[in-house]
Length: 253
Image 1 (tube, one colour):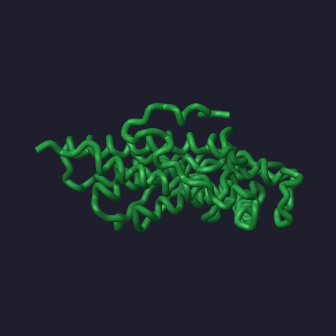
Image 2 (cartoon, rainbow, N blue to C red; image 1 turned 90 degrees about the horizontal axis):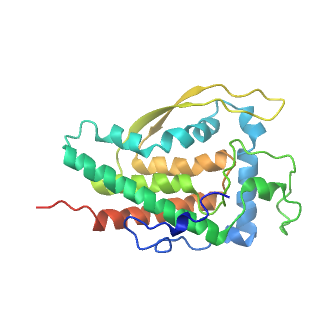
Image 3 (cartoon, one colour; image 1 turned 90 degrees about the vertical axis):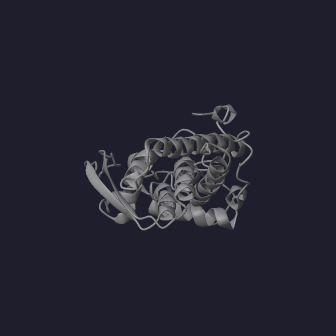
């Protein structure tokens, strides 16, 4: 496991990792809600399914976000262009955004090891989880490699949710459209499929919140997260962002 003690890191702005920790979700009970999300990620996040549809929007979204959309400083640099902000305003915005993202990750990593919920690749290969609506598949593989730490909540939507939350508060609107491109690296797939080549992927977002919503989808399409964990990460990070922008780095008059 990685980042096991990250929830104990001293935050920049929030009190500690528990201040905005998301509560337990229904999926943790392994009941009907869990079965719905289990079967969703099993279907859309399967490496073979995504691999035979390499140019589908779902495959592009899964490949774009780990190194493209997750680079929220690049997103911010795109959005400040042409807004006539001075260097102090740039410094303020980027500092707020990175403080919120860092504290959001402290929150999420603390929550991950508090709930210690399994990832789809473990759950789908498990023989008997006690739910009659989850049929195991011992050969199932996720589209992207699963990171070595628990599922709930999800880190990528945390970083995106925190950063987008600051941007929304700073500019006073969600109605900001933007485009962003990323060169997705080669991606190995299970036999008999060939690796997917490097691909330039461009995504368009009609609003700031649209980017957060797509980050949630991305982890499900990648096969590495249940949806509820992604939603929980984005929501808690948005709360962190609001707290940071409300209490820190105010202009001095």
